[in-house]
Structures are given as C-alpha cells and as structure tokens.
Image (cartoon, rainbow, N blue to C red; front, side):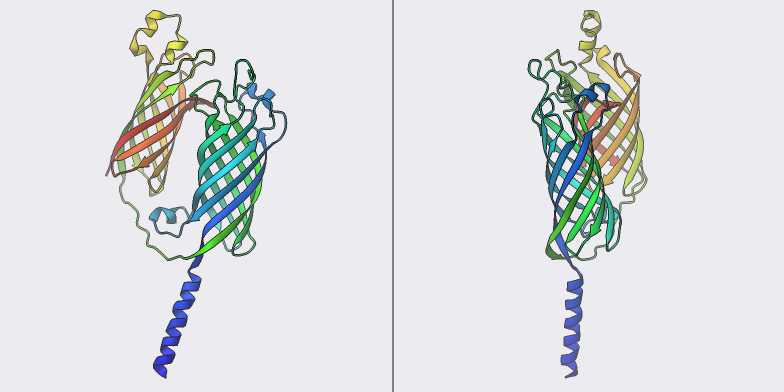
Length: 361
C-alpha cells in the first residue's frame, strides 16, 4: 500500500511539472496604425495631403531558451508578417504593401505587463512611382519594388493567458536604396494598437546558457551593386566596396570597432560628364574613408551601424561624411554574407551585396 501511494505522489508531481511547463508556441497578431509622413526633405512636404493608415498581420514563433542567444534577449518572438499602408495621397503616392520578417525583443516584462521593441525587414510593393509623363511630382519612390524597414516600441497588457492588447509607436521606411532615382523614400511615423493571440501548447524546458569567450577579431568583405545617379539619365553605374575591420568583442551581444573603406563609384562619371580627361582616369572614381562601428549580435546575425568620413574623394556631393547600416549572416565559423546600405544624412547612396571572411581570438 505504501508503495502504491508513493507512485501516486510521484505521478502527481511529474504531472504538475508538465502542466507548469506547458506554454503556447505560436502567436497571431494584428494591429491598426494612424500615421503621418515624416518630411525628412523639404521637397517631400508638398506630397503630404491626408493622414496615413496602416494594417499589419503577423505570425510569430516563441522561443524558450533552446539557444544561448535567446536568453540574452529575454526569450524573444520571431516570425513573418504582411502589411498594407495608405500614404494619404492616392493620386501621387498610392499604397504600399510589404512582406517581412520580424524579431520582437522584450525589454521589461512581468505576469501582466510587457515593454518590447520589434524590428522588421522585408520587401515592399508601392503602387504609384515616379513617371516623367504621368507622375512627375512623385520624387519619393522611383520603383515599384522596394525594401521595407520598421522599428516599433510596444506596450503590452495581458488580458488572459492567451490574449494580449498592445499599443505603441513605430517608424517605417520604404526605399529602393537608390537603385533608381528619384528615391527620397517614404518615412511613416505611426501610433498603433492591436491584439496578440497565443495558441498551440507545447512543453517549455529550461536550457543552460553557454556564451563564447572570444575577445577581439578582424574581418574583410567585398561587395558590389548598381547605382542610379540622376533620374534624367537612364544609365546605372557599377559600384563596389572593400572593407577592412578590427573589432573588440564586448560581450555576447555587442562588439565595437573601426575600419577602412575603399569604394569604386562609377556614378562619379555622371558628375564630371563634361570633363572627358577626368573620367578617363580610373583613380578619380576611387574613394577611401575611415569608419567607426557598433554591432548588435543576435545568434548568427550581426546588425551594424557605421559613421564614417572620406580622407580621399573626388565626389562633388556627400564628399565629406557617409554612414552605413548593415546586416551580416555568419554561415560558418569564418565566412559571412553581407547586405548594407551606404547613405549620407537621409539620402541613400547604394546597396552593398557582398561576402566576407573573419577570424577571432
């Protein structure tokens, strides 16, 4: 009899632990936004007519600490989503639709309340673009297909175990990275509200944290792309970058560094189109600069921000300073792919597509 009671108590304990460890694996979300276009350039102001509206629907996967990086970011949610936006000027700007990936990272949370930030990136389709004959006033967007970026800060309120209400604000950007001009881009500033619904129970276990102890590293990457310099000129020019970096690994989430950039910019030919002697010398199409770097590490992804300045350049515009934001993916211990946007102030220069090598100690 005592043995029977012992097994009953053990069974109850195991069952109770399994109930405690039951979590919802997926999360559906939908939100509606009131928005306005941020006039980052004086020429954009006349395009702003009415308030903008935006709808997002997404499907997220919760993390439970299976990987070390998930502990670093407080067990974030990642997933896919779609959005539809009305830019408030249907005749000139039209509407924007996007498919994107997102990562929702908690900053502060308890059983009833959570503050998080969500980053999203993907591809968008804008219905109205610049046209010399039919839509000459649209200097914001030059192509139907564009990149899509969104950064949102969210305040979430738990209604029950499966349902959340949230509100917040976001910044959204549509641009083609100057693959074709004009390309001032569309920037939305939004206030949003929405709901999350969790479903599909699963067992959530505790996993150990295991972080790398490396302290510094070096890298090099080569990148190329195409650049449209002037909407009156249909030519697209080849551009390329060679980037050398040295960096200090601060911890498992961040690293800082500095580096040298060497650029080949074929669009300089257009700036000096009347000077055949100048453009015949390939050295005049080379620029060189120095940059500082900060990288945020999320698993195998590295998000970088790099302000820089030229110490050699024959460019007429943006001839002193430049900036770069980028994303690297480490697909092996030493090799990574890279996509980044080089720009100055709020104006895109070109998109860099490349591959690189690194080693760390």
